[in-house]
Amino acid sequence: MEVNMELQDEIIERTDTVPSLRLDAVLGSAFNLSRTKAAELIAANRVSIDDQPCLKPSKELKVGTLITIRGIGSARLLETGGTSKKGRLFIKTGRYRSRKPTEQE
Image (tube, rainbow, N blue to C red; front, side, top):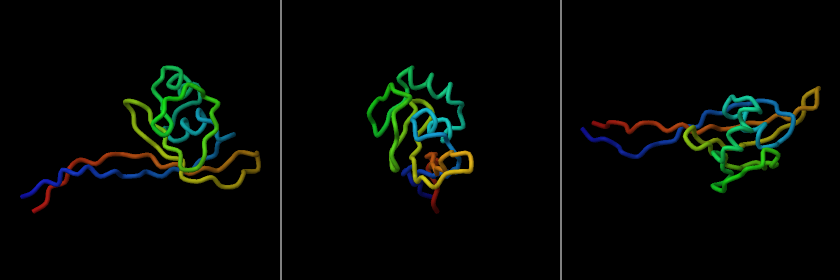
């Protein structure tokens, strides 16, 4: 029996609406957090964008941006869509979840 030690990432996609593409709004959507909690994590210097620390909750994100919360995980802004009747933006995020090594016979 062999153990495949490569950890494979599984992407959990989520579609949601946000008022804007601000870091705190997208972070809250991707990780199911309130914008206040997201802003607290940003202020505590636990959030990075494309491997660069970011302390501005108002930072505008672009499609393809990688968001990482130290100790929690990573997510990527996969795409943006149109707007809802209330003027909110549709977004799709992908949250990365590591899988354990698999056993092979």
